[in-house]
Length: 406
Image (cartoon, rainbow, N blue to C red):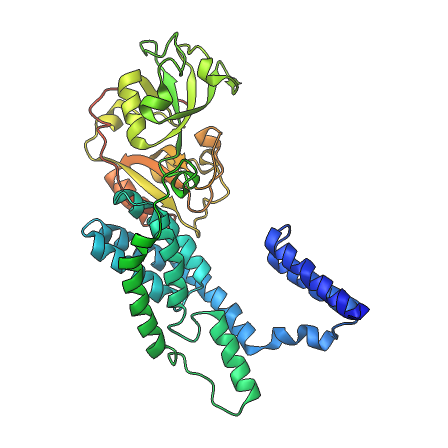
């Protein structure tokens, strides 16, 4: 082996390690290694930049623009809402429609974008039918890959093969749907296998490190204020078995403006303490009734608003094209802008530990929103949110359930 070959192999090995570890963005790694090859003379400038003029690369870049445009248009979110309603009617029909929609969307839109947008709905379906997320998330990825075989632009490999095919031969380029007659057959076989065989093969992962918990299913962050008549007063969270009885985790305790973050389980609770907690909506409601605590929001809920029978409690998903991203609820002035209240926030793969009003919103955050029906409809039409569904909870039957806090 010559010295030059060793250098080239070393650079390739370094590139693979950097791709694997992702110390830097992938594009930065690729361009840096390319620049090193040029500076060392192992690659001419012409050869280094020739790939950027390849029709396949240009087409792939255009497809990224198309994918982003489709996301911005809201048509994909509209389809997700319709699928969410369909899955409520029939498990088999809903699952089939869900997978078919992913496959056909992947035939024209970048697979990564499709998978990212469908993950929240996938988690929701798994919870609805009491399935392990592992039984749906892996099929989600596979069916997106299979869907890419339906068209020439379905996957970048098809475009690259077509570019090589036309560049080295005198044959006509492949047509847009020339792959379809083979792709449809693969799709049908794949659908049958995924719907009927995969659930039997993939194990249900129900341990505490499962995808459900890592995605924080039910992991809403909210604030609970301890009333004077609460059984918690003078007791600790451990004594009242908050985690065991309600499956709620107390992250912090706020007392007279000071944050208590250590030894929370053994901290004596005082009237007026604010508990930063994580859990599901249903468990918040149970704890509210049993422990006599009140949920807090960044604005005051009037008694008329609480007793209004036309008010709804809904779960809403923040879309990628929303202009609310990277802003806090306080910056947005959510109540004034949308006429509704944000009662809790949930984020996949992260534990939020800040006041709800100060949480910086990210795409695909889930918000628990309470407000008039017409305002919820207006909110759904803004394109900022996907309304996942209404929460059946008797918020309006109890006077002054939610205490105000600016």
